[in-house]
Length: 226
Image 1 (cartoon, helix red, strand yellow):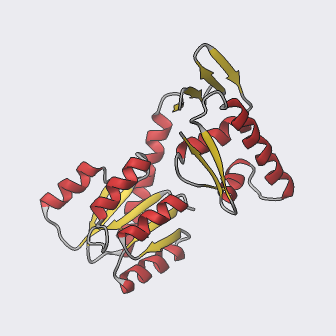
Image 2 (spheres, rainbow, N blue to C red; image 1 turned 30 degrees about the vertical axis):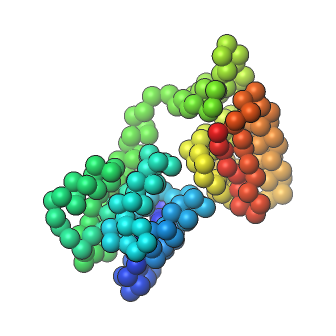
């Protein structure tokens, strides 16, 4: 089930699209303006963002620019009442994955979401071994190790999977329930305690760079930052 951030200031259209997408088993968070959309993006995790261009407070283009600074991979689809070539070019230059002109055909929207997500999956499958920079560390996910200078720290499969999720959500909250479901498939007392142990281990492994922090966000999850 994909989790979608939908930013649309038209109450009727926003409600209709949210209801339609949820009928097709998507999870949807609806934001009524650009600032609310960015707050939602900071506080949660999404598989895809659908942004109306003409949003109040902060337009869809500005929201997309800010999202791209936080996450260069999350797909973005723009909704617009205009079909001007200059707007489409601007959207694609910002990093849009697709563009839909209003009035929105709900079936077409579903098809475009699925097409974009297939392309994302293909990019992931075709990518070489996963390596991430974490402050002064290099995290080699494929080989389950953290590298700092000439020192190499091997970590477990679950620790590597946990750290990969944190890297993918850098500077944003990794929802505790989502992490538990992804790594263990369930959330009970023992899996929650196990995850806390893994977080403690990761903090220890990363402690040689004081700029790197894994912060607890009470009642929500964790944030990796540096």
